[in-house]
Every structure is written in structure tokens, then in C-alpha cells.
Image (cartoon, rainbow, N blue to C red; front, side):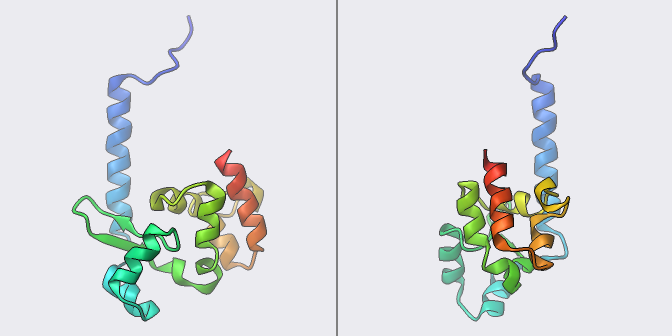
Length: 136
């Protein structure tokens, strides 16, 4: 007997619930900051932050209530300069996908997450190569 290639309705519902729980918890994590805090950190206004999110320059994550939160670490120079390039390499500007890539260990980076690799001085080209591999 072969296993069905598709998830059942119950399995799909469980996966969706788990995804919602993950997003809710991630938005409440200690490293997340508000639009006001991010704008202040970068000495810009909230509308600039919104423009940057739309353009893929930064990771702004919308919560279920529509409020935005930002991982503070993305504004470190070693990561900040790579965010938009990583989105392009992944073929997306979807903030949750970019965040997922940056926070998932990558075999091409000796098991480091791309974020940690960048913070440790790994060349952005290596991280972009990992992103391109991830996108395919």
C-alpha cells in the first residue's frame, strides 16, 4: 500500500494552527521592536519604514491585528546591508520568508543560520549563494 502524497484535512489544519502559533510567538519575542522604535533607531519616520518594507529593504512583520514588528538584529550593519540582496536572491520580498531563511541553519554555511554567518563576518556572497540554493 502506498502512502497518500497529500496531507489530510486534519493534518493541514494542524499545520496551519502551528504556523499561526509560531508567528504569534515570534512577534512577541524579545528581539522584536515596534515601528516607532525601529524608526527612532534609524533616525527616519514611520512612512519611510513602510516604504522600506514594501521595497524589501527591511523585514517588517505584520501581526494578526495589523501592527508591525521588526527583528532588531536586522539593523546591525553586517545584516542590514544584506537584507534586500537576500530577498532578491530568494526571489521574494515576503518578510516572513526572508526571516525564515535568515533564522534557519544552512548546510552551505556549516550549519550556521545566515544571520549568524553574516554577524560573524561571512562574506555576503556566500550567504547569497545559500539563498539562491534555497530558492531552487
